[in-house]
Amino acid sequence: MAIKHVIIHVVKRDKDGERLSKQLRNNENSTQGMTAQLTDGLLELFSNAHLNIGEFGVDGDNEVEPAFEQKLKKYYDDECKCSDFIAMTKELANKYESVIVGDQLHSVKGGYLVFYQYERNDDDWLAVAILNKTEGIDVAANLEVVASEILDLKRLHLGAAINLTQWKSELSTRYVRFRTGLAADVRDYFEKFIGCQRDKLAATVETKKLKSAIQDYAKNACGMDDDVVSQKVAQAHDYIKEQQKLGNQVQLSHVSNHVFPDRADEFARQAKEIHDLPEELAIDAKVLKSYKKLSGRGKGIAISFDRGMLNTTVKYDDGELTFSEIPDSLRAAIEEELEDDLGQDN
Image (cartoon, rainbow, N blue to C red; front, side, top):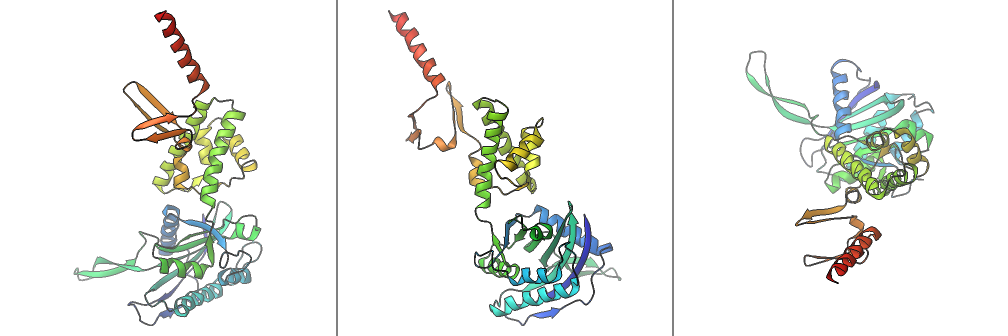
């Protein structure tokens, strides 16, 4: 990972209702020393934060270019080289201010705008994070304990990272990753500044497609029976939950290595070509639950069935389960047992 450009501007107010103060740098920050520690910390924050995924657009229309995207087109060439990083970020900082002032957002305090361009996995990225200072404690030269303020790098409240390479290629609609906070007013103003819109269906669609891809490959390419297929899907569920707990982006290649370790490349290729899955997967928590069966064991009974069968072929009513369909093998075993019992009675 290589940092190419870094610059910090400030657009903020200390108290609600105060006039915004603005200070724009006239030269880039160094990419070495403490600045490198800052960008490393920001990259870690982006990797650990729960980010929305989407693209540029206005009011749901991705054919309309928001101001942020217009600035990128003005300054970036097809090789993702910026003609004037300082001028571009100054214009974006001014746009940030105009969104707050124009929408009369008197309670939005703004902050330090850190813009930085970096390269990761052969792709160029442009990131912007809105940071504020937090109170701390320091020791002065006379060894007195004094109050101190430092940039808060423990949690990413507002930020966006644009994959410039994917944006330029126009082959993806998932090139903006952004964190906008929970409060509606904060979320709306920051999304307006970036001009990004969420890919609302991506997580649901991709989680369903991943399950179908695993089932299809396990059954048709590997010849596995239904029980083993279910085990493979459950393995994917457990792995994804583990990655989410660690704050990691779920990668198709990593799921492939975990579920099909001996045929990972082949599965990943089929998942991309046939099921149209990307490398970086968006996961929907509700759909992910369907990866694991409802099951229970006790008092000589073991029951397991797909969650989608509940209230369809499996009915639950006041502690009783009713199956309108049962597996042929179970039916045959029951009928054989009943016939044996009848023969013994005769």
